[in-house]
Image 1 (cartoon, rainbow, N blue to C red):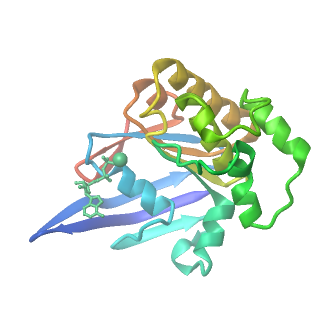
Image 2: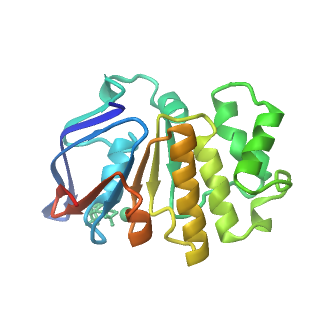
Length: 219
Ligand code: ADP
Ligand code: MG
C-alpha cells in the first residue's frame, strides 16, 4: 500500500457559510495502480489532490504515505520533490529554461546525479528526441504537456498526481497522453492519481471513483 487516506475531511469558510467539501473520505491505493476521479466542477477533486499531495492540510483525518503519516514529515519540500510528481492542467514550465533544464530541475534540487544518456533516453521515450535544447515557447501545447510529465517523473516518484492533465489539449493529444500514462504505468510501475473530466482518461483507471457531495464512490 503506497497511500492510505483515513477519515479525511476538509471545509472552507466562505463568508458566514462553511463549505464542507470533503466528508470523511477513505481510500487505499496500491503501488502501480491508476486511480481516476471524476465529479462535477466544484465537487472537491482539486482539494482532494492537494491534500494527497501535501499542498494543503485537512481539518480532520490522515494521509499515510508509505506507512508514514505526512503530518510528521519534517522536510515537506524535500519529501514532495523526491516522492510526488505533479501534473496540472497548465504545464507550468519555466520559459527561460531549456526543456532539458526544466526536466532536470527536480533532480538538481535533490542534488542527485544527472546522467546525460538517461535524459536523452527519456526525451526519446516521450518522442521529443532532438528537442532537449529547445525552449517551452518553441513547442505545441501537447508537447509542452509531455515535457511537464517528464519533469513530474524524473525523480521516479512514488505517486504521480495529475489534476485535469488533458484539460487544455485537443483530442489527438489527449490520446497521446493516455498512451503515455499507460506506458509509464506498465513499464515503470508508476502509480497515478488522476482527476479528469475526460471520459477516455477516466476509463483508464484500475479504480474509478466519483466525488459527489463530499463523498467518494466506486464506479
Ligand atoms: P473541483 O476541482 O472538483 O472543481 P475544488 O476542489 O477546486 O473542486 O473546489 C471545491 C469547492 O471548494 C469549491 O466550491 C471551491 O470554491 C471551494 N474552494 C476550493 N479551494 C478553496 C479555498 N482555498 N478557499 C475557499 N474555498 C475553496
Ligand atoms: Mg479542479
